[in-house]
Amino acid sequence: MLEIGMNGVIKNYGFKNVLNGVNLEIMTGDRVAIVGRNGAGKSTILKIVAGQEAPGQGIVTIRKGVTVGYLEQIPELSAQGVTAREVLMEPFDQLFSIERKLRALEQEMATQADPDTLEELMRRYAHQQNLFVSMDGYAIEENLARIATGFGLTELLDRPFNVLSGGQKTVVKLACTILRKPDILLLDEPTNHLDVRTLEWFETYLAKYKGTVLIVSHDRYFLDKVAQKTIILDAGVCQLFHGNYTFSQREQERLLLLEFEQYKNQQKKVEAMRAAIKRFHDWGVQADNPKFHRKAKELEKRLEKMELIDKPQLEKPKIPIAFKGERTGREALKLKDLSLSIGDLRLLDSVSLTLFYQEKACLTGDNGTGKTTLFRALLGELPLPEGAVRFAPSAKVGYIPQETRFDDGQASILDVFRQACPCPEHIARSILAKYSFYADDVFKRVSALSGGEKVLLKLAILVRQEINFLLLDEPTNHIDIETREMLEEALLDFGGTILFVSHDRYFVQRVATRVLGIEARAIIERQKHV
Image (cartoon, rainbow, N blue to C red):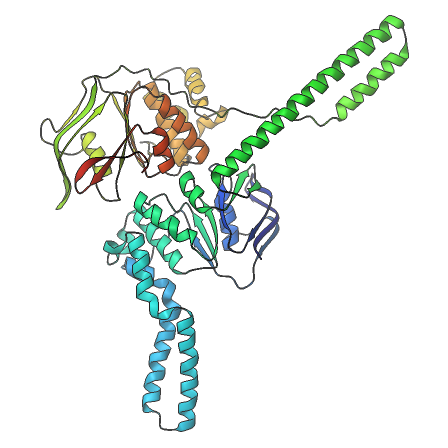
């Protein structure tokens, strides 16, 4: 049965054409991934399905009577003083209303002496109770406990929602959306703030979900585990593949190679026609025979009418991150009896660790175990005993945080780059172009950049500064898949040492040569398949 349909949907924001004649059909029970670059219009499709936005042109159909649950990238604040538990209870408002009616009817029945009135009350009570049972009313606490445990929210339930971190708010809103059990579940970047353990639980949950699921995500491993169909959104147009993300990439590659073969065959035909045209003109001049010129004109008209195939781009762009920094000694970083605490919370207890030159080590662990706090210690932001953290004498450390910010948000990309890396404008623009900042893009304000663009700009600066030790705290958050792949290639080419935090299992598998985990206030070695 058709659950969601779009036919010729166009959506503009000012002069920017985001959706350009989108056609798609999603059937009941489908689990569909929408993949594309940042700004391609993925969130716009979800908002149109959710009814939050209207298409500029085209027809959108949603199966009559369905319920829709929508998780936005940035959660809205709740009323002041509302706890996380109360937010999670919102999906049960109708059940609580029915329960109040049942209690009121019970009181009326207990004091009612008239048989006819009592019979009417009993009839109404039976109707409300059947409705309560059909909506799983007796399992409210069980469902709440299961979802809260799965998402690791048990310890946050009694805290005010508005004081939670951005990631915690997102997870609470995700759990709230799931608890509603909507017929259509719309998820916009649901995995950004989930640790690996929670991700695996969520994947299992979605695999068994009985409704229709439409997911926007850049987590390739997650998409492979969950999605049955994949929509590639490019240049405002959708292309549907009947398989997961990896399948869609293989099919795209196959179709691209097929198109390249068609391009080469057409080019051979065009060259042959041009050669024939030249020969006929030459013969016409030599023989002074207009028939040859007429034949050449016929071929020229055929060539003009031919629809030429553009040359397909087979190679993906790469970030130029060739290692230029001085090499460090064999022991790039050494921790000795390092202990870390936040207030009364002990995070690390007498940890010792050595990272060697050119290792690419991933630091994993559940949310709240101290990964970012360790990075703050490495950067010298926390008071530590002498000798607890020791970098190699020649180590030049570069850091990219979870949320990349620049001191002056109103400054342009070009200004920020030249301030950090003094050089003539033409050289700066040449470097920035290699990081996908072309032409007038360099004059954009850095406050208007996407998360991925900020990471690329920061990386361009660090490479120019010839750093040889990279600290990366969840560098793939809010970055589209194409940019993630560029970043992976860049880090694989980097000749220095890297310590990074990531919950992106695909990214870890590709980049890490060593996987470490924070567990029970210690840092342990883990196998690479996290």
